[in-house]
Image (cartoon, rainbow, N blue to C red; front, side):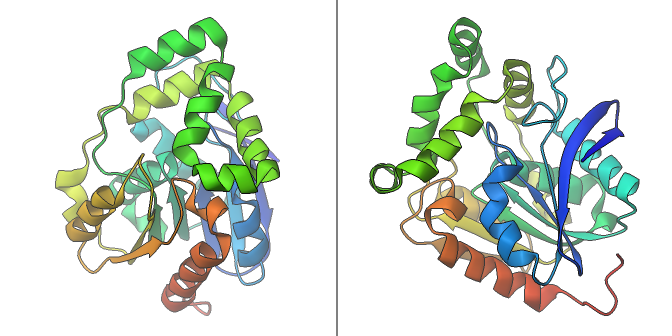
Length: 264
């Protein structure tokens, strides 16, 4: 399905019934990275997944974009669907969108799950621009897989690895670069104390993109937040260790959900 919001067409899917859970993917991926989570969570929740502006089957207008724009896309999509309040789960760039949404539109969130992400990030956009403008996203497949998935996982799970590679390869250049600009130099660490909703911070034990130290900074900055380290997992912790990841995620959502009073 597609919704025209904020001047762009956003591709989304909805599965299951119950309290809303909205899921936001990483840079150079799409909503398919949440397939396993949607399958499990849709037994108890109404799961909304969407392709971020510039990714998947959503529009990819020329950039640069901003995190405020990406978060406002989510706000507009929720309004279009009549969603008054939702749990929000974001990984990497999706977590950065979640942080921005929690700061700019806190009234929309029941809870926040921040996976393998950061509140302060430095990104060399110029180097990535040179790489993709000369060779397209194919130039980013190898380096990105090395950062996203551990070598042992890539060796043992070629099909899952190729699924991630296909998402990277299929990301529009304009969308990739637009989102790179959005997250480059983000600095939300000083505002973490403004976030009041229940928050879970998840991080892969061996994540080198947004390592444990970044997760700990978020945990320390958001009062009452919880931290869970996914063992033997790199950046896409949900793909490397789906059982441990989803057990921690479901346990948190089940605890903070109020099925009787959650707006639909």
